[in-house]
Image 1: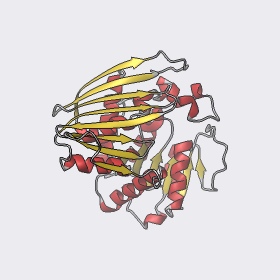
Image 2 (image 1 turned 180 degrees about the vertical axis):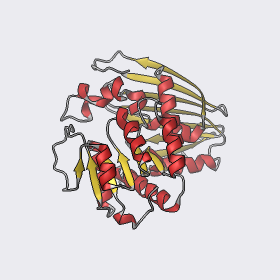
Image 3 (image 1 turned 90 degrees about the horizontal axis):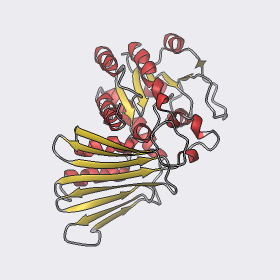
Length: 329
């Protein structure tokens, strides 16, 4: 791994300039990082102009000539591992957008490369940085609702609304070959569940393809997970719900915690009271982009301190394994 230098002058290559790549670019600039280059195919449907940084169409050339210390892997899901393997072989640290890939191919090789090169690798499950989920994790770790027994979570959004400027049927999310479908694309909820319940021992999935959407993937899916400690999770993910919904409940032996993402609200219930004993509402102050900024700051802190990110390669692999098992791959 190349030696870390002044954090604000560390060389960063962003591979993929779709919506998430451009978000990371803007956030990196806001944090003072300016030694940036692009690796891009030129196929992005976003027409907004980009800063005048060096740009490469060939990844090998970008790695050889720009010599980045950090590579942000932000292209289509099915291309993540191809880019990550080449970047890791060059000695770079990697921030890989979720999901880790569209299959498990190449992950073992990436694990070996990271170990031999000393690369820091983080997978972009930014919900780990949501202040309310962090608070819920603390409450559960402190036995505020007793022993955790079960999690149920629902996330549904209408996929044509995601990028109104392009045909949803042509996006990566709509195609199995590019790593689409709610099980993989919405796997934030899988990572969240595993964060709370631990390693999965059993996974079952039931797909729903009855909406009017034209997709090459499941339209929705219900995923059941049983952890090695016996805790269960029931996750519903879909591309068809209007209005969108994203909410979770954490059930313990002495109470329950409810989390509404869109309302930015948490309610804590005690086993012997019908009304919440604690309410946390951050709807007036919550900025979604702060999660992305905080995960970037955490990533660079891990590089500087040679520590393991909260969503390291193993966490990204675990979430992808569950998603693939749920869809039968």
